[in-house]
Length: 500
Image 1 (cartoon, rainbow, N blue to C red):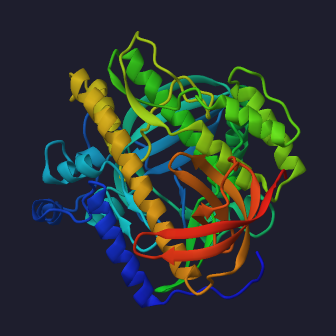
Image 2 (cartoon, rainbow, N blue to C red; image 1 turned 180 degrees about the horizontal axis):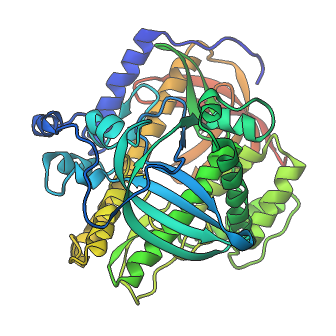
């Protein structure tokens, strides 16, 4: 970028963004507010300790802990490790039993079924469930007894899952930890966070979990799981003041949780299939635009095979990360756009279903975030009925229709979040018309050509000079115009593309 300056949007600017968020949600068939009936149901729920019941184990004494964002209160999962003989480790993932208080057919459930996901905008979070549930009664909050679905898996020294089980148990979160603090400690850059140090044995617990997570990741990457960096812009806030939009950064603690959730989702999918229960699967199809991905690799002096191969694509990504760590996130953004989006589909036991190309797994569902995603809540209901030996709560036709609906609403939520990031960026850039920026082409097609810049992280449309541009190319652009209400940022190309 041609210059660096302070970026600030005051509280009134955030108010504008909140208004835009509500409007855009309605335009995208999402409900920004809960119905009066849903709020009455949430207010009427009694606060009670987890009850004792047949088949529910007591695991309160295990050193459970959560790791999430610093400000997260809707805690969906806890984890604990139990070393076994021969180098094996038993990993337990506790997932909040949201269905216990958000019953099927309730007004709360109806809102969740409409939106299907929490919507995280720059200005405001629109939770899928009323906050009295998601941040309190159905959250695995520190110090609270909660019933949870336990996903248990035995991981061998080579990172393979050799045994698994699913059951219900009572748990207590003994430490609410945050990604950044845990990551800095794991990487030796800082002492253990206070809550981590306060629980006897928890430091060794997390070191074991970190080691097992890395083993799981190595196995997935050996099978072709893609090493993609996130380029999503997150708001930098000081109270009610928006200071900047910066890319989300991965770290070791985030990877630990990600690896455990991928493994737990695989165990859940296989458990339901073993019980003969139709369920939702989360898939990412083999990319149709593989030819453009191969061309992108060629522009970087590399080569990919003619047929799609996750393993070969990952090796290319690893080479580029070593060669150009600064530009790696931009490259990943281009690859993600070309891979296409994930979707939910019906899985009928015994019938083939596509796997997840980017994760290099064939059995995958969403089951570990029921406070935030409706497919996870549906999967939880399927699990609980299967554990009780009862018929599934959803038939195949309903599951198929809900899979399509959840895919569509997830896409709508992503568009809302993306537009609010653009509106926020337009607010931050509105006084900078005429400035020049270095950018990368993130989209090129009949509907337009798009370029992403940094500081602030923002994506805008190229309205002049876009002929011949391809995804992944680097260009210099001039900011022409912004429209906060519509989230428009317009550029014109002022320098020809270059190969990085």
